[in-house]
Image 1: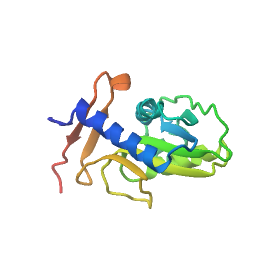
Image 2: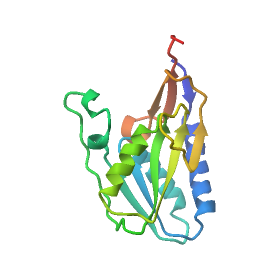
Image 3: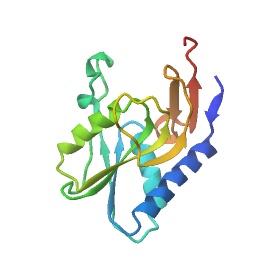
Length: 176
């Protein structure tokens, strides 16, 4: 299966996210919250690029495993990871970060999980990859890369810290 996006493509996508966030939120305090298992790594990379800005930046990680509507269909013993929101959620400008936006269900679960920490003033969504095919009315405010996929294709994202390599592969479903 060929590599669809290289490490350089991923880095450019992260750069686009950081620049778009910088332009839209110039000087304002923001809180990046990465959705655990790869969204948190994307958020860390964006945070690194925004760190040179003269503004307050907060960082957190959110595990949404128990909020998913498909929890029963996950592995028999799903790997739960710890959420870490070390800042005050009340009144914060939160930018929720994920690696891939597909149906919107992960983001719905993340919004539910986030509300357990308080009521932010604003929540925006940043995704490294938008592959379309929504099932819910959820759209990103910031997008690094847009991929044209078919509904049943699989988009496999690998990131250095989590997987040991930066690459994205699409496994095409042979059924229409």
